[in-house]
Length: 338
Image 1 (spheres, rainbow, N blue to C red):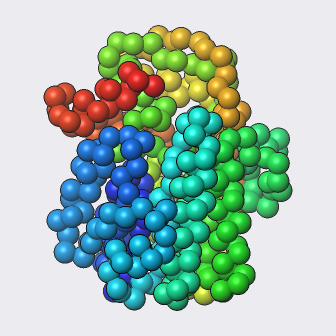
Image 2: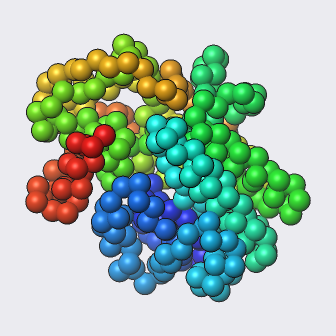
């Protein structure tokens, strides 16, 4: 039985991943610090089914506290691998709090790597981001694209620096590493600050949809189950290829223009969108577009969920939440405040 440490386990992607690993027969230790970026209650709801599982253990600890704090908090087990999802998320907020993003995403990752080194844990899957490509002119984005002077937000810079750190520990201590660059993940439990979630809530409330720029920006929306499938395939690849260092895109490879996304969310919710055009937002890239060739070759990765089906599942999840529940209240508050 494999024992896997998942950082950021209470978040959107982390909770889905932990459920998958438990179903697959793994023992999972989950770590989260409940960053106040959004309501803790949402993450507690994500954790609730996990806490009921006999092979799941949860530790509330902040990576910024250092490797000694991790040693004190985590069960003393022989870990087969670490999947590092924990990060301070969001491009826009990183412009307002750049130091906080570097502290969480860079210093926190350094402390995790040091803890792994001390405990001779040799396998790491690191969650990176499509934001590292910036406004790279060539599309689709390939992993061998030179990325110096590409990042246009502190969040993106923190993720690219994280990739550099993982290479340092691979080089010095022979860690097996796979950097997985995620592309705009969506689906049930999606963070309330992200576009699809905000658009759905605004439509349900009869409010207009903010469109930044002319609506032509595009994103490579990837359903959460397809992203989790890529993570698990990446983990299996690492465990069967010790000493490796690789970086792969985990995206859908089908960019969707903003105006088309708004129309698709409207169709899923059953409301015709009203649009409010606004100036471009600083730090936003024009397009994200994953070249999946390498992930297909190395991992057998093949995303399968069409946008309409993924949005249907997301809206069905929203509809399950009672309007007076703590989660529904938190989601509505997040929508109004953004």
